[in-house]
Amino acid sequence: MSKGEFYSKGYYAGLAPEPRFRKVLEIAARLGGERLLDIGCGDGSFTILLQEALKAKEVAGIEIAPEAIAAIEKKGIKAYRLDIDEQAFPFSNDYFDVVYCGEIIAHLFNPDHLLDEVHRILKPGGKCIITTPNLAGWP
Image (cartoon, rainbow, N blue to C red; front, side, top):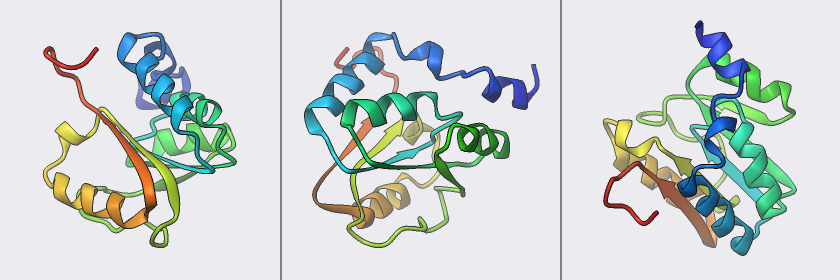
């Protein structure tokens, strides 16, 4: 399977029924929020589910894979290609109500940079949802 096929077939869509992702959607529905950023958005399948749960009016994604950027933009979501280990996020301070970082933090060389940028772009009182696989985790 090519990278293009991987993203075009909706790799995240198949994960949505898993308990940990259902829990994320439940949390998002309780939070609500006008603006959502999905960091590591992949093909956008889960981004759309988050947008619906939050009832967000504005949504954006960050992804490093150009194939994923193409797939998410076909779904009508503005996506930015950047390396979250090093690059500044292209958003103003205090912009987003909710930021989702799904299954990415464990793959970073510099998670502090990610957390600093998330803190910068979140509105006061905004929420960040971070997930990572863990056999002893809350699901």
